Length: 129
Image (cartoon, rainbow, N blue to C red):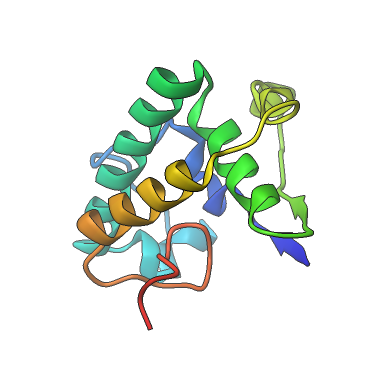
């Protein structure tokens, strides 16, 4: 599988907050995932994923996101970076794996926080059918 946008247009960088806004020329301004109230749900989920990544693995949330994509099956994860500092932490996705329990915990966390998911992507829980 080829996973494009593994960091969800920057949402999983850990840099966005509920106060983040997007200009009219920003592609995210027209993306339903980045419109309120849904955006607030995604930011809340990201903050919880960030805590999980730090507490359980001592990794940044972007490493957790990339690892989730890679551990979901035979996958190549693609994401875009416009500046070198956007690559900070990417290497931390290598050399470890998420347990089945952690994969289930991530799905539970997403279901709890994201009431109206847009997907199918990292932040659209698999259990929703």
